[in-house]
Figure 1 (tube, rainbow, N blue to C red):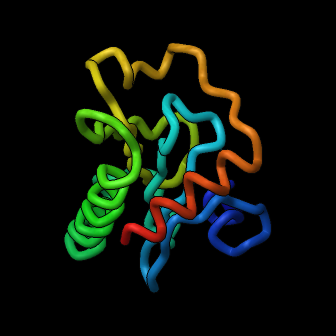
Figure 2: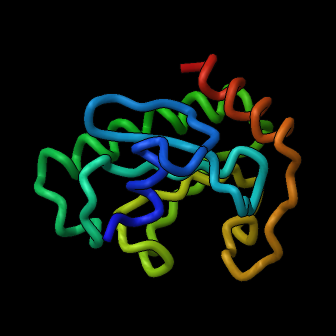
Length: 130
């Protein structure tokens, strides 16, 4: 059965897309820790990040780097934090989270409630900075 991320990549489930190429897809997390919280995934559905072949793994991080650089240009923050947890969705993914302090990337804290318009504006700003 396809993961929720595979359904997002195929367009079966809508997303606030930042960017994509033939192998990777980046989109805003709909339960963000901060404005701009982005997920970067390989299009190939593999559960564990460390089970990706070397080329796909390296490409995923290079793709995430481009997204993080665009985020830093458009989202006020000190840095872009990176997290790989992999328990909630059986599809390898990287969280890119704008942070100003170490506690900004704690996944147990309450998530932001953004409007559709806020998500669209953030996604457009990051995409335009690529």
